[in-house]
Length: 102
Image (cartoon, rainbow, N blue to C red; front, side):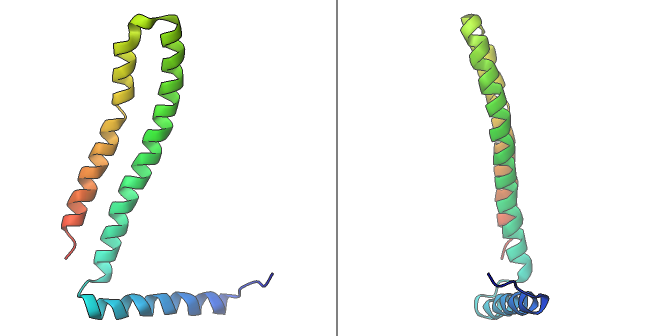
């Protein structure tokens, strides 16, 4: 397998930046608009990963609790819903960031 040198990597990065600036001339979008869109996507993605990890731990503990105490269903349901607010906040932030584009 061939290893890429620093020169090859720099040529690739320069080519991608050249394409980005060429697209800028055609669409009227700026590089800042692309970075805002990237930030909006990262907001949703990172929040979704965090919520998934939290709900995995809460869900497994909740299943064990419900096996011993079925009357605790309402309390466990509330614990499962709380992390979902994080992804709703992330969606709102991404929506506002998307409004800044253009």
